[in-house]
Amino acid sequence: MKKILKFIMYAFLVLIGIGILSAIFGGGDEETTDPAPDTDEELVEEGIEEEAPEEEAPEEEAPEEEDVDEVAGIGDTIELEEMSYTVHGVDKATQVGENEFLTEEAGSGAIFYVIDVEVHNGGSESVTVDSNLFSLVTEDGTTYDPDSMATQYANEGGAAFFLESVNPGLSLEGNLVFEVPEGLQQDELSLNVREGIFSTNEGLIRLSE
Image (cartoon, rainbow, N blue to C red; front, side, top):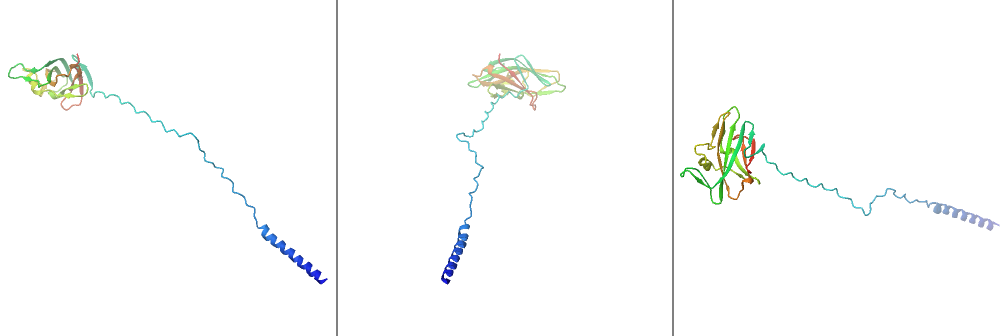
């Protein structure tokens, strides 16, 4: 009888031990959950390339305008404030000067343009007129200065445009002589005039016929 009781006791203890071990090792497995997937997805446009901004076409530069205040033609009077200018005529020559000892010849491959110019002083004070108030200009902007010696020979007894004083209300008329390449045509030329030696006020007289 004692053996039976002892066996039952051992069996009971074994069952209790098994239960304890099962509780320790079986109950320790905690349920794990996977982290929620990231719902922020990057948006990718497939097959579409970002278009580069269209480049603006460069603006076409307007042709440069002549930097003058007035434009006139042969026979017209151009007024620059108190001064006025008129071209009465244009001649071509290979030599200028009426006196055989006071003449000037154009160089090889060159020709003289002799321009009859009248200058009027409409102001209230005397002004000084000189050949450096004038220049001959081509369509491409090439500039020719007067030939001072030829201008003097072309104005015997008249205005030589060398520091000439013109009183108010009076005029000065004479020939301006320019030496240019002989192939240069009159229709390509204009006479640029300035109001005074230190003035930037300018005008243009076209010599085309």
